[in-house]
Amino acid sequence: MRADHALLAPVAAAIASILVAAALELLLNPRPSFARPARAWALHAGVLSVMTGILTVLLGNPWLATGCLAVLFLILVLVGNAKAASLGEPFVFQDYEYFTDMVRYPRLYIPFFGWGNFLISVAGGLALLYFAVTQAGSLLRFDWSASAFGGGAVAAVGLACVRAAERRPLSMSFTPRQDLRACGFVASLWRYGVSSRTLPAVTSAFEGLDVRIASSARETHEPLPHMVAVQSESFFDPRRLYPGIRPELLAEYDRVKAGARAWGTLRVPAWGANTIRTEFSFLTGVDNALLGAHRFNPYRALARGWEVMTLAEVLRSHGYRTLCIHPYHRGFYLRDKVMPRMGFDDFWGIEKFAGARRFGPYVSDTSLAETVLDALQKAEEPTFIFAITMENHGPLHLEKVNPGDAKRTFTTPPPAGCDDLTIYLRHLRNADAMIGMLAEGASACDRSVELCWYGDHVPIMTRVYAELGTPCGDVEYVLWSSGGNVGTDRRDLAMDQLAGEWLFLSGAHG
Image 1 (cartoon, rainbow, N blue to C red):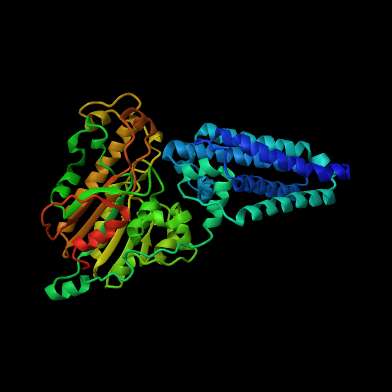
Image 2 (cartoon, rainbow, N blue to C red):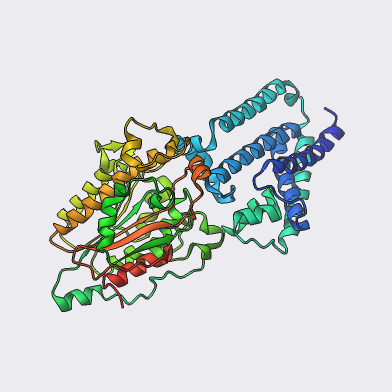
């Protein structure tokens, strides 16, 4: 291949990559505006030029490099649209683990991505492979020194564009839909990624907390109560979504709520998924909105060494054994690394549930309740248990409605296309049974038990919401004590306020 062509081809390939990426942005939902700041376009051109140049050096063929980027960008667009359809939030840089998690936990991800999108992505990859194989002969005759020089030059120009744009960085709201529309896909991905390199600088609500639970126990000569918090997967009261649901479906929840210290709705930082956003806010008392780029996955910052005071650490410092129980893989969301850093003495994962009953594809809520109660019965010291349920985790549409399900869950059947709601309610009955089991078991404990029950987010039920209306995203919580409760008080809270309210009502701090 002539040297001048080998030098010019990377430039042409970089221009093609820039244009192809801009064209594919037209497929995004929401669609970015082309009337974006010059710095956003500089990032778009610079990042794609750097990637084209580097791939040209590695592959020896600039057009193969452009093909790789086109397929990658198409996959990102498809993933972004699938995420926006299910969760109302476009793809962000912090979602890069979707691709490894899709391999590790395919049932949780591929059904939401869509088999059609998955097959399109595979077809694109195979076409790229075919191109690479058929061009193998020309690749061997390629002028590698010229390719390296041309690719390196393109990457250097791209890097200069990026550095120029970063002299006065684009301001991000970290509201993904807003930033995507204003700055474009590539620029918002870049800025989210760069921003996540700096660890958060926020203070936990538990920092310097005046905890008096130990002194209160000494004054009354009563043993410290067990503290049990349950984060119930996709738990909310769907009776406010559709009045045809049998009111007795949540009979145990209603009973516990009627004798609770407090109950109400929670404004949570997650919708349909991203459980750890809610989980983190509960355990730290930190408003998710204060985390900047880390609001999307705060556990990554913790795994990197960020330190923040947690509820578990507060209770452990006052004599509690702290235990987290989640009947799923310990490494999911990096919990195996994060939970010890958050102050938990032990973390029981799926290995603790060998042979446990399942309801659907996951360990049943009632099996988890039995494990929690067994841990309390065997406890020789005051114990804080944080239980994260799994049974009602979707995809709901992979399960089938059984005969009799509709009769057991509805007084008036919902419109056609609402099978996901029937399946969700089938699991919700078991969550309700779990509440009853915990309340009954707590009453039989030697120590009193303070129970905090809440949902992490509403479930993903896209077709149901199209028929019945989309909920606001608030979920339910209840604070209950086996030692007796003074009246019932409705208090609607933000997620970061819940643990502090729990400690206050249980007499844990002043």
